[in-house]
View 1 (cartoon, one colour):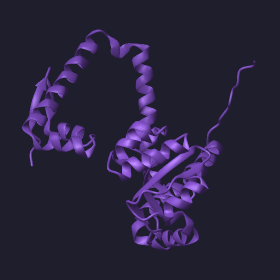
View 2 (cartoon, rainbow, N blue to C red):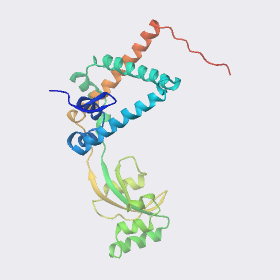
View 3 (cartoon, one colour):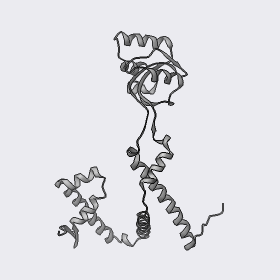
View 4 (cartoon, rainbow, N blue to C red):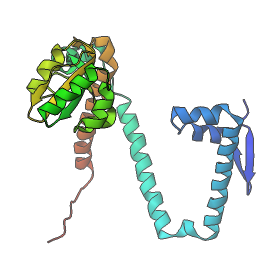
Length: 253
């Protein structure tokens, strides 16, 4: 398949393959726009032409001969060389199913999801006030959400009292004991804690469970891969320090 020429700027061709390489640098959600729509393709080509024009203009000003430019080119060369050699080093690393299983079985606690609840509450400082709020909710004079937004002194009032997903061990003992025993959608009796007086309501409950190996396999493999990469990198650093002279020079205070 021929590499279609899309534009020519001052004698330099911009080809389809050039545009494809740029598209591949974008995140997938943006890549689709440039790959699948004529508007996206034209927009990207306009940018490529603009860069070529600005590059030509910079050269006409002699910027490519300036010390700042040459320094940055050197820095980029070092970065690219490092990226390529590290990519080649790490390409030799593999992770076996046995290694994944071994780490999973040795760290069961890390893959345990504790019992949790989706919970909301109303918090005030005065006991009589919380009693009045509960009575008003039970009589249908206000809703739990409106009461939380209007009366609660907890920052969760901005979310109509929602604390989101709460695991065991996250809340103070008095709150947690009532919340985890409370039936779904039932408003608790008044609960006193060190923070004040609460009304609690649980929207949903989630049983604790052990995440199966298949569910976390990719995550474990990635973790092992990263550990091996770090180990290989450190070993290579020690090896290179013996090959090339390194002097750390510190200025005197």
